[in-house]
Length: 283
Ligand code: AMP
Image (cartoon, rainbow, N blue to C red):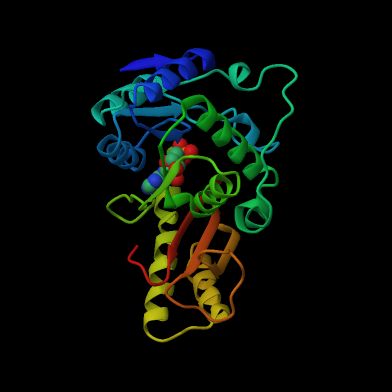
């Protein structure tokens, strides 16, 4: 397994591989890898000749006052997990390498980035789409894999690649959870033991709403109220949003169906956690 920090070196190597007819799978990450990332890596391994993961805590997707500085980082551990999943190359550029002095170009997806995390984290998706576009240009992947844990991000990236005719297939992968249902996330490392318990209210809300939906409750208002009640049973969580939206357009719905997305963002202590499910799916 090779570690590459230089954009130029990464791009030359990728262009050469593609020129030789080798397919490339890319899994973009911010590092501090866990089993959720590993599931994407293994799928990428099975699909392409060359498996590349990027590890880059992208400053442009963090707002002022967010956790960019303290985001967990552990390259040694990441290398072990990546190697075990069959990664050929880790692309780990420094900030200045991706955004050199004078940088001023951005990719923006319009309507899909307005609600949910786009509303509570202004500028976040502009940073995400820009860095992913740059990674696609540098790495030339035939396939790129993203987790449905970041449901809106996946929808936005699908839109961007389709709208801008990018020659890369986007694969969405299931949410990987801890045994007790908490969605795996690098940010779970911030949680104290007590907060870790409280954090289970997100998964509890998904289950509660899905079973009410299966029991015949179709009103988005009623289902949203139920999710709010379940989450507010925990004393401290602060709700950022609880929303039921169309799973494709992310537009608000009044009446739900199996393709309706329930999306949650909740602060437990100082940690912002997100989770989601489609009402018709298992979660
Ligand atoms: P991150 O490092 O948090 O930016 O995540 C990198 C990729 O891994 C994104 O496509 C995430 O959606 C995906 N990912 C993160 N956590 C999970 C999880 N628990 N299950 C599946 N995919 C995940």
